[in-house]
Amino acid sequence: MPRSPGYLQHVEYTGSELTFSGVKLVEIARHTGTPVYIYSGDALLNSLREFQDALAAVDHLICFAVKSNSNIAILKLLGKAGAGLDLVSGGELYRARQAGVAGPAIVFSGVGKTKDEIAQALTYADSGIFSFNVESAAELETINSVARELGRKAAIALRFNPDVDAKTHPYVSTGLKKNKFGVHRSEILEIARRLNEFDRIALKGISIHIGSQLVSLGPLGDAFGRVTNLCEEVNQILGNPLSFIDLGGGLGIQYGNKKAPSIRSYCSLVLKHFGPGTAFSRRNSPFRILIEPGRVLAGNSGVLVTELLYRKRRAKKEFLIVDSGMNDLIRPALYGSHHELLPLKKVSGPRTKYDIVGPVCETSDCFAQARSLPTRIQPGDLIAILSAGAYGFSMASNYNSRPRPPEVLIENGRFRVIRDREKYEDLLRGERV
Ligand code: LLP
Image 1 (cartoon, rainbow, N blue to C red):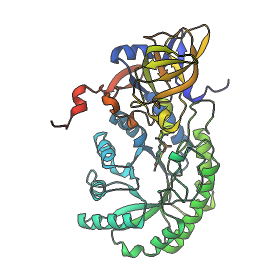
Image 2: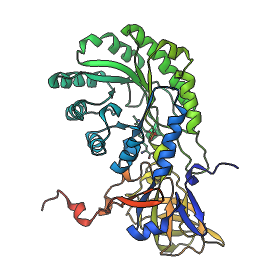
Image 3: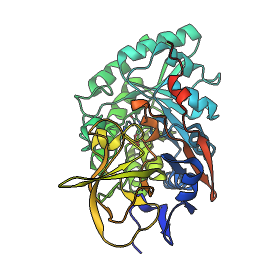
Image 4: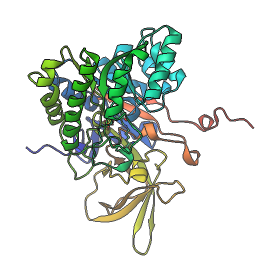
């Protein structure tokens, strides 16, 4: 039987009701109201397990990219199942702490770490984090001086900019020379040569992250090859081998027609370059492989349910106005991204093309254009916006003074609220008249 598309892997109609991991979405929507974000714990854990199984032959750490979905219940769930975390801010570090994730399972990425954030990471849960992914020589100096002040030593990886075109949306392409991310090869070698100037730094690895929503493995293979060569050159300068590489995240998911590579094929590529039996693994042993997946774990593990408020007919088209907007899910407005839409109750009969828009006062507040939905769809009907588990709630804002939606987690056929709907008072927190 052909595998269902990625966005449908945990979503299906049972009778006429749309279910998510076996739970009727309408039951949740009735409980919380709309809009509401709903995640499947099973979907998250299944994807994590796929990575764990495929990488079982090597010492590995799968660091979930917290930016993709930062709810502490999700972090705790993944942490308990053996995942580490990839962070980019003090706020995410704080979340990791609340979720009870241990320091040795945490890496800290990001181009603009402040002294405070560096200090928090060095002293995280007393023992500090596993490693910083360092983005410049200047940052290295700052980490060195903060570590000295605190009487600590900082383990680091240098983030390599391999100058590879990830062939994804320019906003989420990070591995080109012109991008702000990473350090160029020559500069990495230069830093390795001057390493003795940094008395509080232990250079242990090389990291990369060339972009997000990659739907072809070609650019990753290219980047992995360049990393292998670079590690070799760095090892020669250091005189002792590095102990890990961090290959970043970026594996895409299927949002619409365009398929994405499977987790298994991605892991095979990783093993082809760095796994047992490779020249790389013979020269670098013992060695650990880190990855930082976000979207591929969370993206198709979440949906956003919204209610149809109004139909609005124009001469050439018809709008469906829903109660969720670009403040809740900004991806379509920001990247022109496609999300499948399914009514919670299956409606038969003819279909019509609609523009599905939100209430926010911007023309960009549009979830889909000319999208086919049942002609008989009516105000009051509920619609699931699929593939909303990554970069959905975590990018939500209060624009137009709209309280952010609640978040719900389904586990073992039951659901619970893991974040309350914001109240009007929440909107004013910290404001003074
Ligand atoms: N590691 C680093 C250093 C990153 O910058 C990112 C994502 C990841 C890992 C995780 O990448 P993933 O596996 O999720 O592709 N808001 C955009 C995506 C931004 C990605 C930013 N960095 C979107 O909604 O498509």
